[in-house]
Length: 107
Image 1: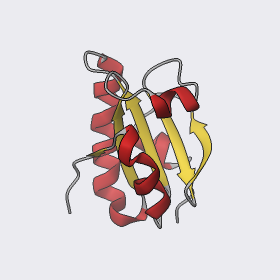
Image 2: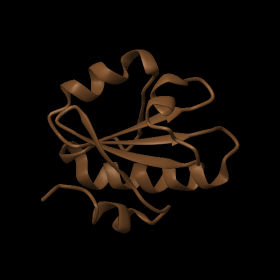
Image 3: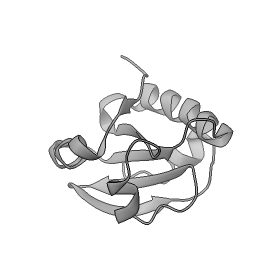
């Protein structure tokens, strides 16, 4: 089971999120953002633990503008939760994986 996070772009975002049969968590990040990198490590561990019960994606906001603009992402990193192909809510805080896990709609 891989714990690498899947990058996603403006172009394939809707297709990937709409096809997902599990909740989708998207981290919006920027290169050089230390908090973003720290969160990405936590999310990679979380993906490894949860496997196919959740899909965790990463979006580089320096390369993708449409989706972050639609969500009005103003600070980084930001975590957005999608269910059934639709945006549900932002998950607050830059918490550790257990804090993030507790906010996910999984068993």
